[in-house]
Length: 625
Image 1: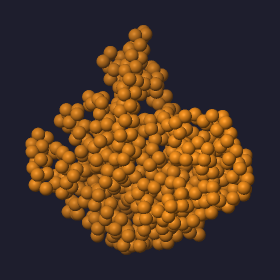
Image 2: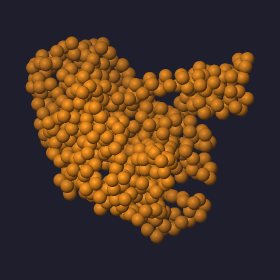
Image 3: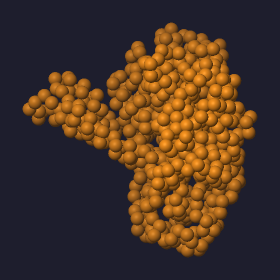
Image 4: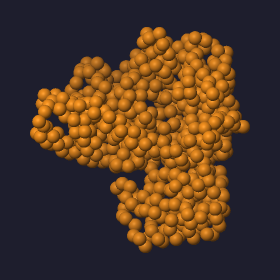
């Protein structure tokens, strides 16, 4: 302990705060370097997660492990964006093997606010603390638990807590009950704000399904209001959102109306990074121990004296990329699906790094990220070489593309008869060579040229809309729970086992997406399937379907499931009870469901296409006729 302190102290003489490996290994030393602004419990991320789980365990909640970032059986999103996504079938009414009260720490990826990353609170990768009531307790108990944890465990003053509540509209009434509970707990009436559905309503996950009002919790940072209208949700930084309790009591119908459900669920989410920022009296999530070592390395590489927004963006994007590459299923840079997102994140990090004169850096930063998280997520360390290799390759590819882009820029201006770079030309540089508009503006300025930015923005907005459709929510899959997607889901299990039989017993799922029109299944295989192999797999699936096999669900521990030969990614799930679906004696797979009850319901299986998804991964698209 003493040596660790001396090392940190010695290094601190050269920079205001300089951390070495001792800081990461010795949290006590690190905590000494994080001054607390408020009179509350000093708490690093690891301790917060531990306290949260123990608190809800004491309230009869069973701990479930973090699901993979890339959903295994929920194709409604490309990534797990919240703790509720792996629980969609149970929120729809299916019984969970672990009971009615659950708690976990879920690793999440969200790209919807990617343009806000680098401010005080927005992140692409984050950890979400969550507790659930599956048709058990409801509003009053959920709010009381939240209030007790915030005040008695974390030590926040009730006067610092501000909350928002659903104001009501033509679909659902004003949530007076929630506001009343907060008042009974001692939250001042003036600290309770009624806001619209845009701010205080969750769901449904698809076009239809469970949804309901929510109440969000904010911490007052002590800053002055930016205006007389400043309230929780304002982006000026006065109010810092840390927790959200969602009350699922309505079912959205296909016609668009909202029907009161017979069952009710509670789904909550507390951001780890935001909460520790407030506990540690920080202005930003980037000033906490899960970011400081990364940013200080970037500061060292850049030789800059100040910490810049570019450093924050790089730290966030490479953290997200590291977790995607190191996920149970994993994804590598490509131009589709999750691969498109990870490529976009890495390349945005590289572009920002060029702004601070940092090159050949991605593996160095990822090493620090792995070190920070390897105790909580050992798989990152296991997949370390794979992660670093993919980052190195993508950085080399993109640097080459950027050089080609610079040549294209020179080519464009050499043909100029005026001093204007058109919006179309600027967009070409962005789309084909990854040039952000800022880079094009800087290059143009050096040549005494101007850029038609307005025209560029029109092109860029069109591109953004296509990107949102590409990386956003699919309006189908398990969340819509339709008969068609349920049948396709069962067919996917049969397909996976048929591939193991015919191609390789070690084949595993590497991605899945199901819409009412077709299934898409990605699996590890290092070559193109022959036409004969495709026909053989298709025939085997249809043979199993024709046997009229019963599809049964059984609950058991992961260890027992493994003994029975059930397929799944088993990382960090030991001791948990899970659902195992059996298709006769042919297929055994851990899965949340839902499924057909008999293979006779499926119809005829037909493979439409077999193609490459990424290096070492093949993709099959198929339908049921």
